Structures are given as structure tokens and as C-alpha cells.
Image (cartoon, rainbow, N blue to C red; front, top):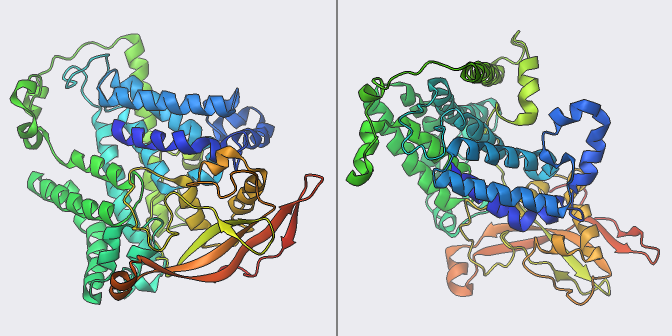
Amino acid sequence: MGAIYFSAFLALVFQIRGMVGAQGILPAGEYLEKVRTLGVLRFWYAPTVLWGDSGNHALMALVWVGLVASLLVVANVAPRISLAVCFVCFLSFIAVSQDFGQYQSDGMLLEAGFLSLFVAPGGLWPGWGRKSLAIQAAWFLLLWEWFRIYFESGMVKLLSGDPTWRNLTAMYEYYQNGPLPTWVGWYLQHLPWWFHKASAGATLGMELVLVWMAFLPRRWRIACFCIVTAWQVVVIATANYAFLNYLVLVLAVLLLDDRALRRFVPARWRFGVEDQQERAAVDAKPLTALSRVGVAVAAVMLTWIAYATTVEMVWMFWREAPLPSSPVAALEPLRIANQYGLFAVMTPHRYEIEFQGSNDGKTWMPYLFRFKPQDVTERPGIYAPYQPRFDWNLWFASLTTWQSATVVPLTEVRLLEGDQDVLGLFRGDPFASAPPKFVRAVLWQYWFSTAEEKRTQGVWWTRKLLGTYAPTIMRAPDGRFVELEAPTLEGTP
């Protein structure tokens, strides 16, 4: 968990100012000013420590505190406190991230991070935690989250009505159409159709059937762990879904027990590692008044989360179920009780938004991205668990209109201003001496190259220009931003 938190905060070190900084695309300060109109409720609907200061220095301090706390978790130094700091820092970012923090993986991490507070041992140097055993309800809810990630994802595939899942053609274009494909995915994309049909069937089988092995006797759980771990390794190699797959791998460890794990612990470190029978022999200490309060709070929160997550699952099958919805809605701002559903509808095509600048309106220079496909000769990389949120957001934006994806025109404005924080989201600045006079966003359609094209031309991609995605804009002498030319695309292809 500490390593996953570290990857999340490390990515923000290089991106947070460009995304939500004072001169970023979606400034956190402007967002909080709008939420401030809610009065005291603003602290619940925007749970962040940035209310006092949301400038660049405060944002970077938040990220660095989270980084240090995540390393302390890895080092097992005051893990419960360190996990709490990680949770607060990450939630504080998500609360102001707006379009850059609406991903399911963020909810997964916040839910797992919160539940881990009740599993992690207390104390400064707890070692193996033999004197501070995990709350079994929290342990089960973490496993429940793991199960729901799989099972709910399988159910939405069927409930969405997407015909590609029903006829097992969903994987035909999967490897080239995800947010950030990899070079391994290029090779898998070129395998026969029977392989892709089998992959689609295996995905549904694992998500809907195999994960129930988590509730069977020990041998079944260990077998389940081995299968899903191998599966996640392949997913990590073929697609960049940030820390999502690593988090699912971590939660799968709960399928194992001490007897299965202790053989991997060096003999000199095994002191204090007990089997379940030995754990039961740990002497119970009488609760202090403060401890009783802690137990009561834990009982309320864990029961609340259990109810909310169960209701969310019931609603997938029976939306009109007569169950109280207020407890579910109340937890939504904290993102600790979520409904999951990955790849409910498969993306049939790959579109890429590209920002371009010009000084004469005729010759256009592209702004190069750090991670998104752009140069057709560049091999797609493997970046996970690092998450380039800006690049991710543009993939989602390409599937809708520019009016719905306000990040695109706002980025155009920042590029006309020559904003260094936003330019830092790109690989470089083609107009280093001065900002361009005009900026536009065009839309390309991309395909993986064929084996013959890759062999003869050295390209991983082929692409076709579809037109301008958003208005071409310029900055007038009075400082206003005006539309020079309307987009040639009316909506998405």
C-alpha cells in the first residue's frame, strides 16, 4: 500500500501545478471559491486540507508530505499514522482535482487506504504487528473490495448491453484502443481472432465465476490467488492503468494466510510471525476509555461502509430497491464506498487530440506529449504504476465533444499564455522564445501498424487526420482570447 501511494504522489510531483495549480488548467483555488458558497457543508463536499491555501506551494507541500508518509509506510514506521497521512493527502488532492480525479482507480485507492487504517498495526515500530492484530471486519471489507472490483466489472459488461461482450468480440481492438497502450499489446493485437474470443470469454469467466473462490476453503483461495495474479501481470504488461492493477494484486494477498506466506520470510526475520492458532493465544488487554471510543468509531464506520457498498451492488441489479440511500450519498465525497465497473462498453476506435501552435496560421507545430501515442515511430512504453493524468484525460476527451471536455479549450488558453506549469505537462515547448499567435486542437484516428508496416517502415502506428476538434483561438491585443476558426468536426466521429 505504501508503494502504491508513493507512485500516486510521485506522479503528482510533476503534474499537480499544471493541472490544478494557480495558473493550471483547472485551478484548485477557483474551484474552492465556488464550493465556498455551500457554507459549512463545503468541508464535507470538498474534504481537503487546502481550504486555507491552495496555491502552488501548498499543493507541492501536500504532495511531498504524502510522499514522505508513503515511504514511512513502506519502512513500517508508525504505519497506522503514516497511512492516515497518505489518505488525507490523497483525498485532499482528489477533492480539488475536478476532471483530473474522476477515475475509478482513485476510488479504489481511497477505499483500500481507509480500510487499511483498521488493519495496520499501531505503534511506532510495530514489527509484524503481533501485539496489534487487525480488525477482522476491516480485513474482510478489503477482501470484499477486491471481490467487487472483479464481480461488478463483470456484471456491468452484461448489464450495459454492449454486444461485443455478448458475442465475445470485445477484445478484437482492445489492445490498441485503451488510454495508453504498450508495445506488448501491439504483439497481442496481432494474434488470431480465436485468441481474442478466448480472452473475452476468460475475462467474463474470471470476473463472474472464478472470484467466488475467495469464499471457499483454503486450497481454492490459494488457487484463485495464483490465477488472478498471473492475469494481472499480463494486464500490466499490455496496458497502462496506473496503479489500478497493482492495487488489485495487493488486495489479492488477503486470499493467502500466514502458513502460505511465512515460507517466503527469511528465517532470521520470522520471530514474531505466528500462525492463527498462536495469534489466538495473545493476551487480551482491558480497553481504556479512549480505546472504547476508538472501537465504537471503527464499528460505526465499518458497518457504514459495508452497508453502502452492499447497497451499491444491489442497485446494479435492482435500481428501485427500497433501501435507504442517504448513508450511501453521505460517503460519496470521501470515495471510501464505491461501485466499480471497468470496461462496461468497449471503445471501438482510437482518437487522439493533438495541440498545435502557429505564428502565421499556415504552418502548425505540434506540442509533443510525454506518454500519449503521437510519433508513429515511437514504441509504446510501459509506465504503470505512474499515472499521467493529463494524457489520460485527453483520451477520455477524445470520446466526447470539446464543449463537454473543457480541459481542451482551457489548455489552448494556457498555451497561448505560455504558462510554464502547463507546458511542463508536455515533453517540450516548440515555441520556447515566445508563445505562438494561434493555437488549435486537431483530432487524429490511430491504429496499430501491421507487421509488414512495422518491418518495412519502422512504425508502430498509422494515423489519419480527421479535422480540428476544438476552436482555433488567438489572443487579441487587449488580452482577450477570441475564436479564429470554428472546429471542422461536429462532435466525435
